[in-house]
Image (cartoon, rainbow, N blue to C red):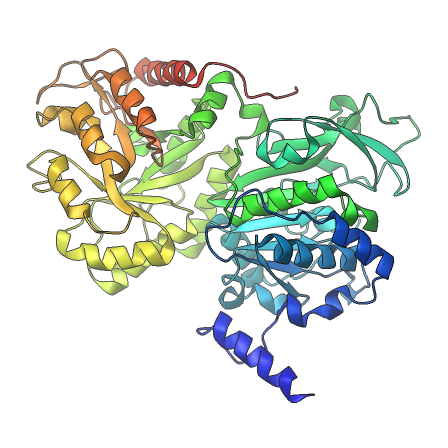
Length: 591
């Protein structure tokens, strides 16, 4: 081995993984050292890819992004050569990252890269035509799921949909299929050389901008998907236009897909705090010099990297009101305190039954009848996995979490933030002592989790009850630290919620919405829009000031053990306000 071949990996290791276990070699290479992953391509193909790759990204990355491209094709435990298109896609991906500046590319075909110390260095991972059961190790499998769930990205190309499958068993890692959005099952109805027509399920979606509102024809071998595939969990972008594609009886099409004509090609989804983009295109090498498909892939990559803001509400969950919320970039969620006498699992089910996709959790709620502990950082790894699966099965995402106090000791603070990472929490709602804020701020920056300081009344929150005090506490601190405005407690404390919202401005990280029958200390919750708090003016002020809370928390703190139509009435009220503010038009779906 030449001397430079020794020095460069060591330098790369020192730069990329100073805390990693060095008992084994670095299991990935930067693109500049990974020519073997795209070697021996014909000059004619290189020229075609060079001419097709976009010259610029639609958005500049917020920071240097790292994309890991993983290649492996395995059958009965034996490594195979894999799809002939793999090196073409590898070359395209590294060139596209370098030419647009959207990301740096790294390559691996070593499953040790799924050790957390290595994997967590990357902003997203791409499975480029991976095939078969890549690994059985439970630790590596959990690492992959947790990596995405905690806020990273996943991009799957073509046979990523046939990964952790081996005929005749298509779901040998069911949680992977759940994350991806489905497993291929039933082979390929169209051969690689045959033409299919694709339609845009949503012409105005940011990840579909390349197609300029028009469907198109392509020759490629694509998959059909079965459970857990469902539009209830995925935002479908492209699918086969069955009216313009040969659907002859001689083609093997799954009975359910022939019945519903739902043959999806590309989609995105949120997975916890993470982001997933999949396209069934990519069997054929020529896809890698299809200019519009490459722009589609670049936009999908920027979505999973976290730079391109693109709505991912599942297609079947879209209503005019939900689309209005998307245009405002607002989310409505259920506060677990509204069902404080129920378990967390029951509260998740309540949110789903109300059509709410987001939940604000809390640390004083029992998890379930089977998991009797409270939902907090002391739960076992097994219990946390069970909680994640409950959220996923219900189609509800935990975005914020109330914990009354985050103490200022290093060990407990780290455990709480690790819990937040594993659960995909974006924002902690808490009332920590001012002396703990320096340490908490460090952990907010380290974990990219926000702290929204909550206000009770003066008796419980002697400092934070007053928004002026709260603003002073946040002054010169990280933008990750701000307020959770509780409208009800402000009103009961003699503070105008509208004035408080104006004062806090962009320091308002999240909000717990209440309407009260009367302003003042005796006011109690009523349905939104039915009380004394001028919610219309408050919500419009938030819109005018550009505030985008983590979530509008629906916290109804009354009559816990009775039927409460006020909760549904509050949802209807918020939907109506959003429709009026966003113009009331639909977002341009083609369905």
